[in-house]
Length: 304
Image 1 (tube, rainbow, N blue to C red):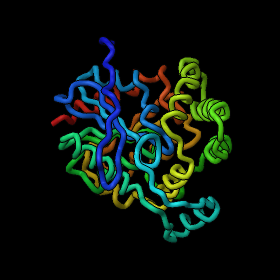
Image 2 (tube, helix red, strand yellow; image 1 turned 90 degrees about the vertical axis):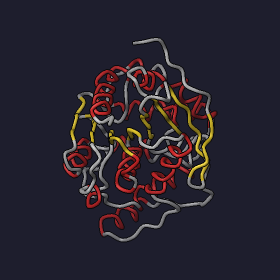
Image 3 (cartoon, helix red, strand yellow; image 1 turned 30 degrees about the vertical axis):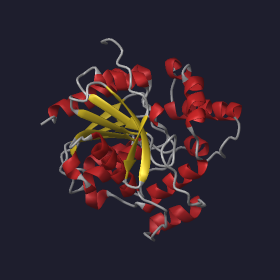
């Protein structure tokens, strides 16, 4: 590793009627890697060290809080989630009402690129961020140099569901106090990592405290979840994507099962699939070399 590449101070970008909180790593003259995080996850879930590794390989790295989480704008529309009803509507193809959809979140990301004066970027999305990245490739293909969809899926309603343990942490009631939030955060990531990763366990308390202080938003997470359901099956549109695509997925992912990654790679023409052994629904430090190498190699192959 080279010397540490620290991130810029957090700043705000007006975008698509929102205000997005972001920071960056590395030289802005280099090609940009835009990192998009998942459901209820703040920009800090892209670990500083992970971002530094990408930046040290010759890239300008941008990470941000999606709408409705962290320090970005909130959409003040109350919603109520009924999962049984949502799944029934999803399986029967009935429309699902939502204050916004994943396409709107993709437009947010494009607005951030506009604010930063970036014409094209390598877009890397994790989980819901992978879905948002796919929507960028569908709706704004001229803004992508490449797409990397990590631990995500195509919106195919017939994919295997999460494990009962992963579903339980996903649907757990939001904790009210810092101590309760730290305990819930630790439990959630023990389940999602699906293995022993002591370096990451050791960082959980610090990250939980930072996430709590930056801004939780349980109703916002509910709206994000609704956006996923309301956005439907992307396969017909993904079949027309021409952006060079890499799909990365863990073989023991308990939340978005490995079939989700396989389905995405099968649907997008000429997509490459990398299945990472021992990887759950997380980016553990021990596996960074393999994950970062895959992201960087794909980006460098498509820098033109």
